[in-house]
Amino acid sequence: IALAQVAQLRSRLDPSIDIVGVGGVKTGEDAFQLILAGACAVQSATTHWLEGAACFDRISQELSDLMAKKGYANIKDFQGKLKPYSRDNKPKDAEDAPSASAKGGGAPWALVAMLVAMLAAAVSMILQPK
Image 1 (tube, rainbow, N blue to C red):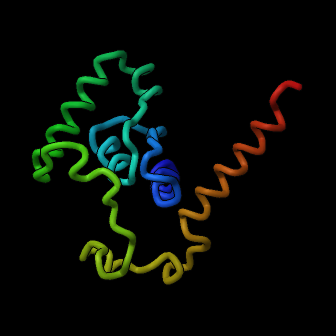
Image 2: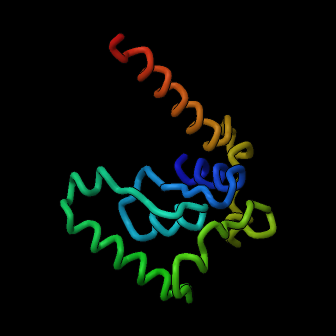
Image 3: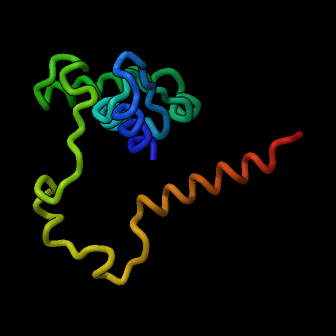
C-alpha cells in the first residue's frame, strides 16, 4: 500500500513537495522501491525498534549495493522513475501464470489490501478516546 500511495502522491503533487516513504522498510530493496515510486526519503521505525540503530547502516549499504548493481550513481538517477504497469513490461514468467480470475480468484489483491487498510483506519477512529 505504501508504494501505491507514494506513487499516487508523486503523480499528483507539485514536484517541489517532498514525500517521505513510510511503511515496511526492512531492507535496501524496500527503500529502493519507495524512492523509485517517488519518495525523497524513507523512514524505518519498526525495523529500528526490532534491530536497533545498526539497521540504518545495513539498509543504507543494501541500498548502495543495489544502486551500484543497477548502475545508479545517486538517488536522483532513479527517484520517481517508476514505470506505469502495462502488459508489455511485465516479467516473462508472469505471461504464463494464470490470472486470479482464471484460478477462480475474487477481487484483485490491490483492492483487497486497500479495503483492509480503510477498515483498519475506520476501526482506529472508532476506538480513539473522545
